[in-house]
Image (cartoon, rainbow, N blue to C red; front, side, top):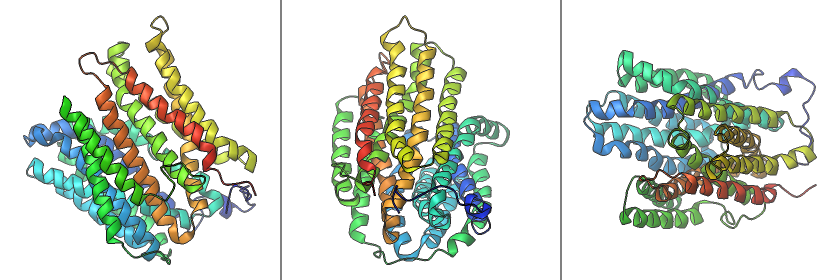
Length: 454
């Protein structure tokens, strides 16, 4: 299937609904599981100061976050190969087991070192699950409904983003920090029971068996991502050396793990995968420093800065819903570059009141709302294009590559942002310029992701 194929909704309700019999459980379970993954990431970030204090583990604070990123990369690589050879059901079982074990280990950990081990297992499980969900639910749901499916996946992040920090704070206050991990662990089996029966019907294919050579490259990529993450936590000349080493390791591994032509933005699937990394990195680097801009430069309160971040999450969800309703080949072909262009313009608008201090600070909020809308219009379409452009026996490997691109480019961007940011002056403009450059590059490259017209 390509973009020339008709995607107008068929007449029957069973063919237009994501929750028709046969796929209802898979869709509900997948949304619940994505929401749990999102809540866990947001809630743990909120609760980690209390965790480090209780376990006297402040020296391992950064590693508790870096460990999940490092182990997710081999998880993604293994899951892609496993899905193509054995099917998404087995990969989902392994991912759920690792993620759940990690939650329990963290929730009952007697020391910070054990908690870091639990976080590493969570990263491994989430890396496997991210790929297995794309492939498995993507095969359960008919291709014409993929725009709706990935819009629903994007929406699953919104509620945890809005309520996660408050819920996590409440849990820590009422029941202690361990309840944050154990509450998620209690819900994961329920989501699994809803999703797994449908995935069990999705068989394997003729994909390659697990290639240990690829896993070695994945370990190198993991090390590179960890060094990039560490560079953003360091100060002085050592941070630059660590960043350079991490960037080199990630680049070398990406050459081996991503489809040929990805780093050159070759037309079709390679550009789709590169675009995912660029736009995810642009959003991640800007979002990480936006609260600092709003509070330090403009004098907003933390509550107001949180509302600004929530507004971007809401417009991301709105954009995702809009793209799911766009019909016709011509309109959908314009959607991807339009969305990326809106995101780039939004980041430029965020910088306007920084450059022209006489202008009101709410202009930055308006720009961030535009960023969320633009990414919402284009981000889910990358997932749709990936499955359209991938042969069935390569959907696992290509889904893995899509998420590897996200992880590696985002790690590089956040590491670079850490080098550009000066703690003494708290000047955020260089970081915003980096995010703007990434979004602009995505807008320029985006037409190359579209297949040739039929």
